[in-house]
Amino acid sequence: MNATQPATLEQIFTGMRKAMGSVPTAVEKLSRVEPAMVYEHLRSRAYAMPDQSPALDEETRTLIYLAAALAGSSPACVKAMAAKARVQGIARAKVMETIKIVRFAMATRVIGDAEPVFTALDQASA
View 1 (cartoon, one colour):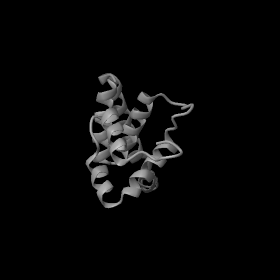
View 2: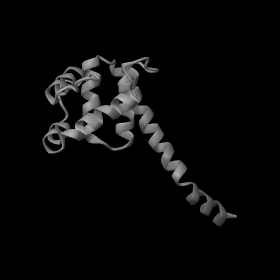
View 3: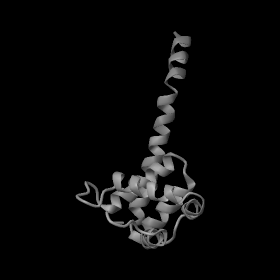
View 4: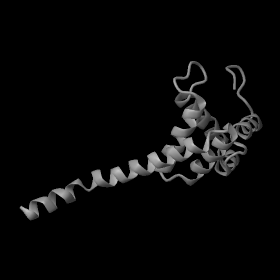
């Protein structure tokens, strides 16, 4: 997309196919139901992951996105980021480490969420 004329949906889809190997099914369906939302989604992506002077490299962005999708239980995003990681050639060890970190973070969340239970048990045994 440029400032004078936005990209067509087909141009957007071509970019997605190049970056991820395919267009997510939800995005294809969205384009038929509410095309303006596809453009809004791209605007949000550009805000979150700017092309100009990015702080993070593309591989790191993909791994963070994958981690957030896993933690947020978003199967469509997990599928999209798995495909993107494959297209980018991200090493298996990096993808697996990302999954292990998410798994640990989720386990830690359970422990943190259980703090009131630990308090009650601690008080009951006193």
